[in-house]
Length: 175
Image (cartoon, rainbow, N blue to C red; front, side, top):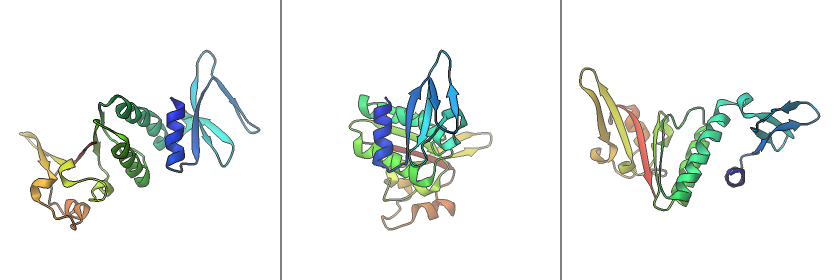
């Protein structure tokens, strides 16, 4: 539902809303979608809306991912998202994860990301972070960051970037 979607955007002070319409018109432009409805992203400060296919990749990804996250919270199930950080601003990634962790009860989110900014003790515990290393001829190997026993004060992102944990990143958060 667009209400839940827009409530999330309002909660994080995202100056946009979405609507699901068969047409849109303002002083500058007009769109019509015969025999179907489309998602329109409305910029609240500019009184302009654009169909989702004309929006930034980040907004397109948000329109795809946020309903999945909201449903996982509502239905107490797991959501799996590959390329979670695709075109998201770092702050939006963090807000999505924090929102899930604060609102999910008995739900789980499994994300794959290349964003090292998520490697912080203030967002995720080391036991929630995994890396995957592909070994030619042998396949993939999974590493749990907590197995390296990082101390709470250590900078996990810096450790990862210096090669301590190997591989690419996987995150899991359970409420």
